Figure 1 (cartoon, protein in one colour):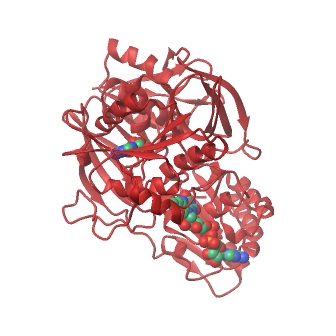
Figure 2 (tube, rainbow over the protein chains, first blue to last red; figure 1 turned 180 degrees about the vertical axis):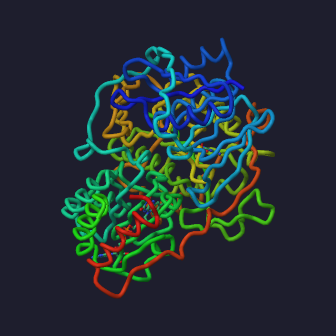
Figure 3 (cartoon, helix red, strand yellow; figure 1 turned 135 degrees about the vertical axis):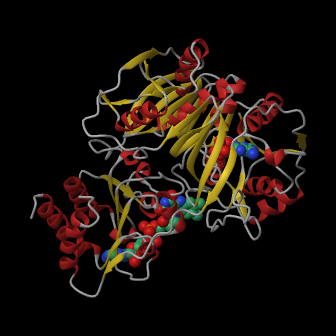
Length: 293
Length: 255
Ligand SMILES: Cc1cc2nc3c(=O)[nH]c(=O)nc-3n(C[C@H](O)[C@H](O)[C@H](O)COP(=O)(O)OP(=O)(O)OC[C@H]3O[C@@H](n4cnc5c(N)ncnc54)[C@H](O)[C@@H]3O)c2cc1C
Ligand SMILES: Nc1ncnc2c1ncn2[C@@H]1O[C@H](COP(=O)(O)O)[C@@H](O)[C@H]1O
C-alpha cells in the first residue's frame, strides 16, 4: 500500500495537519511525503504536476489536509486521475481494495461512513489524528509545478485584521463571538482572551454580515467547519446553521444571558450571564490557572 | 457575457436532517428543497453583474430528477434568464464525475464565458464537482471565490485564503467555485415568481454519460448527542468565570 501525503507549509514550517497525516499514513502503509513547490501555484497546476508523478509511479491513496488549498488540489487531482475524492474526512481505514472514511454530510448534521475503490484521493480535517510529541519530521520530496494555462496570479490583498493568529481550521482553541457582543468594539476584550489562550477568532454570521468581523472568521453552514479541542461561544444563540459548523468540537463552552438559548443544548460547560462581565473576569482567571494557581 | 451557474437542489438549510430507517439515506418526506446556499451566492454574484451590464446573460443548469425543476424555477425567480435541466433515468444517482461530464456537454453547447459553481453542495459537502467540471473542460478553475470582475482583457477573481485574498486573472473561460460573498442572495420577487412559472425549461438527457467513480454510503448516523453539560447560573458571573477556568483545566483538561 503506497500512500502519498501532500504536505503544506505555513511560514516555512510544515503544517501540523501534514504531520498528523504523515503519522497516520505511515501506520497504514508506505509513506511518501510530497510538497508542490513554485510561486503561487494554482490548484490546477499543482494537480497537473502531481498527476504526472502519479502516472509514472501510481500511489494507492493520496491524502491532503482539508485546508483551502489542500481541498482545491485534491479535488482537481482526483478528477484528473478519474478517481474518487472524499472530502474533509475525520477518520480513514483501508478495507481490502477500498478506502472507508468517516465524514460529515448535510453541513455537519449527519455523520457518514463512505466507501470508495482504491486508488483514491482524500482530504482530512486537522485534528483528526493524534500527533505524538516530538515525532520526527518526515522527509519531504519537492514536486515543482509550472504556470496554469489561462490563469495568472495578480496580487495578494490582506484582510485588515487577519494577521498573526493561528488559522481557524487548524486551531486547537477558538474564541467565537456573536451578536450578543453588541458591536466590533467588544473584540478588544475577545482578542485579549484569545491571546491568553493562543486561540483563533471565530464569529457567527450575524457578526460577519454586520461587518464587525471579516467573512473568513464565520463558523457554520456557510462559513468554516471547525473541530478544535475547545470552542468558546460568546453571545451566540446557537442557530442550527451555526451549530452545523462547530458541534464536532471536543469541548464546547457557551456564555449567554438567556438560559434557554439553544447553544446550551450542545455545551459541555456554560455560564448564564452577561458576557461583558464574564470576559475580563474569565481572561484573568485563565491567566491564573495557566500559571498554575 | 454569459454566465452559467450550476445549481444543486438540496434540503433547505433550516431542515433538521433525519437518517432514514435503512441507515444509508435521509428522510425526504416533509423536506423543503432549495438551491444549495453557495449556489445562491453564485447566482447573486452573477446577477450583480447583470444589474450593471444589461447585456449579461445569466443561465442556470442542474442535473437531477423532475423535482429539480423547482430549484431552477427558484433561480429564474431570482432573475436568471434561462434554465436547463439535465435529467432522465439515473440522473439522481450519478456520481460526481458523471455530474461533471453531464454538465460539460451542456457547457460545450451553451458556450458561457464563465461557469460558476458553489464551493460545496450542502448535502454531500464535497466540493468535487466544480474542479472536476473544470478538469473535463480543460479550463482553469479558482476555488473559494468571493468576488470577480470581468473585463475585456480577462476576469479578475478574488480567492479567499488564510489572512486575505489572492487575486487571479483568467484570460479566457474558467470555472469559479463560489464562497459566501459580501451580499446575501436576493429573494425572488413576486413578478419574478410569476415569470419563472411560465418559462420553458428545456431538458437534456443524462443517457450515455460517462460516470467512472462511485462513492458508496455505508452508513449514516446523527452526530453524537451532546448536551447535559455543566451550566453555571444563578449567581455571580465573575465567580462562575473563575470556576469555569478551573474546570477547563482540571476536569476537561483543555487548558
Ligand atoms: C442559508 C443560511 C446559512 C447560514 N449560515 C450561517 C453560518 O454559517 N453561521 C452562522 O453563525 N449563522 C448562519 N446563519 C444564520 C443563523 O440562522 C443565525 O441568524 C445566526 O447564527 C445568529 O447569530 P448570533 O447567534 O450571533 O445572533 P443571535 O441569534 O441574535 O443571538 C445573540 C445571542 O446573544 C445573547 N446575548 C445578548 N446580549 C448578551 C449579553 N450581554 N451577554 C450574553 N449574551 C447576550 C442573546 O441571548 C442571544 O442568544 C445562516 C442562515 C441561513 C438562512
Ligand atoms: N446535480 C448537480 N447539478 C448541477 N450542479 C451541481 C450538481 N451537483 C453539484 N453541482 C455543482 O457543484 C458544486 C459542488 O458540489 P459538490 O461537489 O457536490 O459539493 C455545487 O455547489 C454545484 O454548483
